[in-house]
Image (tube, rainbow, N blue to C red; front, top):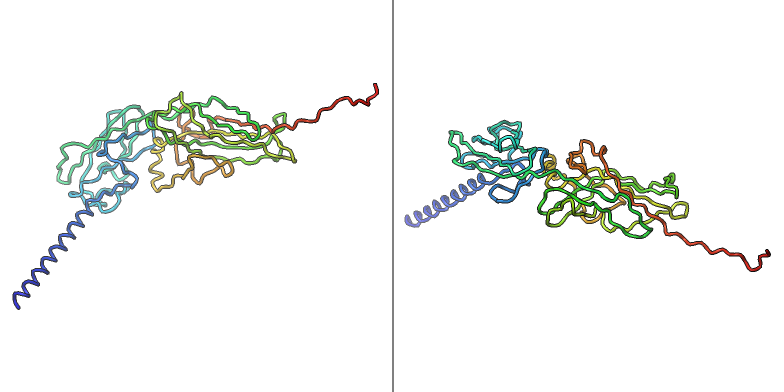
Amino acid sequence: MLNVKLRIMKKRNLLKLLFTAVAIFAVGFANAQPYVPYNEMSASSADGITDSLVVDTDPVPYYVEPDPVLNNLSAAYDPSQPNSGQGITSTFDWSGTAAEISLTEPSAGAEAPYRTVTSSTEGTHAISVKEVSENGCGDAAANTQDITFIPTPEYTISTTEYEVCDGNSASIVIAGITAGLNNGGRYYFLLDSEKAMYDAADNKINGTDIYNHTDTIIALNTGVGDLTATGSVNLIDNKTFYANEHDSKKRITKHIYTIKGLNHHISRKGAFITLKNNTEPQLDVSTYNETTGEYNMDEGLYAWYDADGSKAADVNTTTQEITVTVYPTPTTGTIHFVPNNYEL
């Protein structure tokens, strides 16, 4: 009987030890999990992939995960809070390529594992960070990340006037985009679009405004390869244009597109902090819907660039206009002649 009790006690003790080990492992595993500021910061210096920004971008965040053995960060890192309030006891020494890169500390202080980065100089520059423990023990080697700063995007428009017969198709062409991208691009063009009817003397017919959309965004994806100034892309691809009817007659109809700015997926990294809650627009990258004309988003969240690559302080100041004039198909009149019974 005593031997049975001892065997039961041994099993219970073994089970306790097993559960304790599982619990310790679970806690240790949980403490080792990454708690980056924003889930979308999924790339890391360990991936060996290219990191790019545009020059003079709005500040873009960078973050290093504190050592889980020496720190007890138990929730997503908050750049607005000091290390001490988040279980971080280490400090972090950041540096960048001298005079070529700007590292800005968060409001929480200089010892944070977080910086925002900008540069006004094109080329590949490096940022480095080294963790120093509470007892003053520093990592032997800093962790380094190269950042390639590319020029701001530019675009060229060669054709600003298109003439189309009623029911025919045309593509609105951007003659070239220079962006410094080597894997294609995801571009947003910001524009106003207007449609109205005109008489033969090129005067707008009163009361014939069909629509007037402001701050429409057209999204375009280009293929692999650098899209240079010698390439072209269709802003609106193979669209069928129609003349509208007024007073029971088809009239000359104009589509006027006022381009106000351009950006792409790399330049939009400058809006990451603003858009960290995934408020970016969901855009159809294949078609343009002229009926609705607008997307549910605030275009002011992004930086936009003029045709020459300068950042647009006001997107309504420097614009480029493209007009598509749609002519009704004429109805050929009857032939008139002198009748045989006309008396000379």
